Image 1 (cartoon, rainbow, N blue to C red):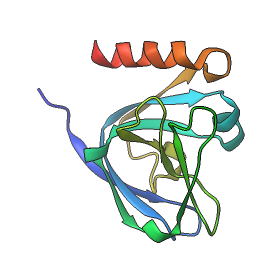
Image 2 (cartoon, rainbow, N blue to C red):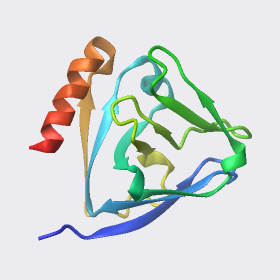
Image 3 (tube, rainbow, N blue to C red):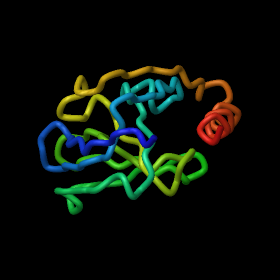
Image 4 (cartoon, helix red, strand yellow):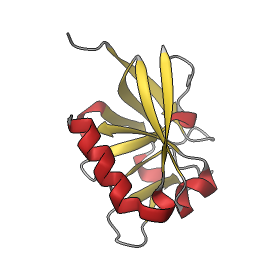
Length: 134
């Protein structure tokens, strides 16, 4: 049986950047403690590229990369909010911030899982990838 999926809209603080993402009714969200995520309070919903669409503001998005340069931290050039980005753990998809969805309480269940990106990001990412394939 395939889980029911629904499109959910979201965006940055000022509304210049808007997106939609196709999500199940029950979410598992990663709360990472790495130097970037801890500072911005990002709650990760990892989605493949075919379940994400930018609906407004492509010309307003700026990028920032550090360390390996794989992750593309994308933010609105007006308000500075990073509502989604291309993660190092899934460079062919997106990580959407639960907190940037228009209605983050629209889900039947949201389970937040701690992700220790501060002490051993690579091991945590590998364990998460293994778990998602099981």
